[in-house]
Image (tube, rainbow, N blue to C red; front, side, top):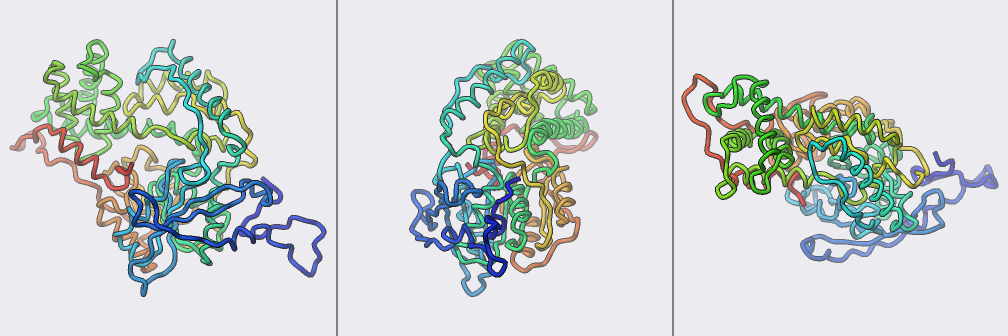
Length: 516
């Protein structure tokens, strides 16, 4: 750890200070800088934006500076205003400027000035721009052993390309420094405390902020939390496990409806049929739809319960032997597969996730890839086991990841869905235990990012807490989106017809999860 890090705005930086006076605050100039609001550009024109400066390296605040771009939507009910709500959309590497617009019509937008921030390295802030490395490995969900070296080579090339174009800022793009930037923004806005709503990676960022600045955090909601013990390699490995669990849950449901779908009478029989279809598509793709895109479609379709009937219909049609000219099942599966590919990796991701050490022995990765290829092929599971840029990290983080804990700020809320694949369900209870927060479990649900996403129960509980201060129960539940109304075997009724348009409409309306 830095011996001279500025935590909470005050640090002992010199031995020459007298006993009768505190040393000068090295961040006072950053905290007192003026903020000049102006309309944001483009689609965010309804918001106000401003650009601030912050230290590149908080151990040397008098050194280089970076830009931080922030956005704001003022509380709609000024007479009820209770402060600022800082937000983060996750990633790592997601732009946060649009979140005040996303949340503006929620009840939170009535009483809070909602603040969005492009974290350091992202978008309108001083950006970490990495050169794109050429693709070497084919996007195969079940690659042969002979292909593993290409996956490693591609990750190595990506790391080298990023390091070559990262200038002098990459080693300072970290969760801890982003949290310190948040506290600079807080001070500039003249707020004694912030309230916080973070999604996905933003839950870890919020927990780190609360650890470093416990006296500056009031109410906080961590929606779809990362696991505090899985930072970061294990977090991604566990995504593949979650996809498999969702597929198995779907298979058990389909097995209870063999009369409607004809895929088998048990989870095991349905999974066997899925594997037969995968083998068939590997031998004979239907147009552009092959085994890899089918594996991706299985993961996404099983994750979202309202799409379960459509997923069963896709498997049925592909099993029957579709032709490219009239491939309804393949076209529907491609809708799901594209959604899965969109959720893989981007931007600052390849730097922030390197703040912790990753295994460097490629044989460990190859062993995992063999196991994941066979056991966790769905949702492009092998990607989560393969070498990534952090395997070949070419810089040394100046400090280890913050060990998070709650010491001095109020009890908060963690929201977690049982079928979430990006931040698996176990992450939510683990984060709640670590911080002593109350947990809202969304049962039988695969969405990632629940608040303001159409679940009234979640919205009501979060609103009551963030608006009125009323905590939900220490452990409470909300129901997720319902499964399709398809009768079990022995009951009259039929499964609804496959609707690619309906599937796309659902995916487009997932709330936070569907944000670009």
